[in-house]
Length: 375
Ligand SMILES: [Cu+2]
Image (cartoon, rainbow, N blue to C red; front, top):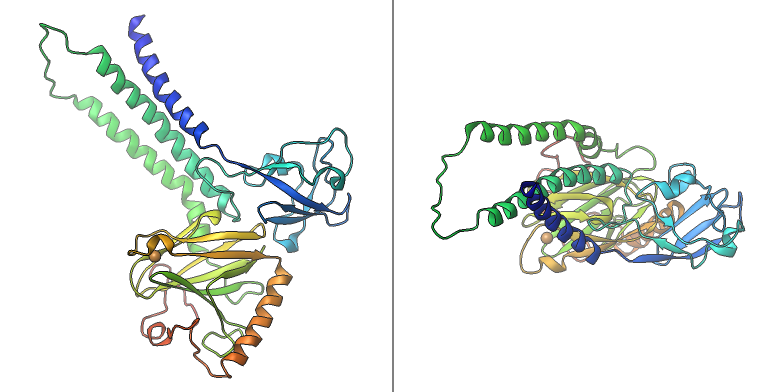
């Protein structure tokens, strides 16, 4: 009996410590700031206190039980039943509800909305983000169970075989059968994981959006110690012309594919959008494609995730996800302003940086998927 109690206690201790850690890092809750329009049909718009928003069509019955929303496709959110709103992990949940089934307007504002970020992740805002998170949790469970078992066993060994006076230590040469098992099992798990995630990898890395397809927004991303530079083709849809938009804040429309070409002018950087589960190295000499599609508007962080020098920690920018029409308006106006400011001269500077000698000097063809990116 004692043989079981001690290992069990040891494992419980390890597990308990892990759980305490999880509690210590619990996430805050955000608030539904406004919900416009009363009820059914009217294109209810929801805004969260942290600046995110989405537009729903159909009913939201915050005071009652079920929220029924059809998300409007033009706003970038797949049309789904609203009952999924609470069920789907990476959208938000309405946690507190009014007393009876009245309208959204009456009850929604001020409603506590739990951010669906977790201990490990901020809220997801990418169409493929759920899949990434699912893979993470599968791996976390596997490694978590292995961690508790091995650390618990370690603790048990420490206590059970504590030095006693007059007792000599034993020497062991190991056990071939055991070693074979604990090598083969992880190898099999790795192979299984590789198979499970291959579809997701294909979607994220191989199926790059067709940059010329309608609705797709192309953005050239240049990393340079210690800033991110972004460039849009502008109204003529042609890079390298006077009406290019050069900016250090990235803007993107919700619900449309954003095709990025990421390059570095000096050293290794890594273009990281935590909310979009997108992390892609910027490699000198390569033009690396990446893409995402936002499911919600709002302002999000862009970071550098590769130690690139003394200023690495401050190498960040904002990504502002706008409603589609608002983005188009911004792009049109800003492109016209650029054309004016550049006096119609092609190959304009990038936000005060003369990038063209460099941009033209290295190949713009991707090193790992072999797709051509227009200059
Ligand atoms: Cu960097």
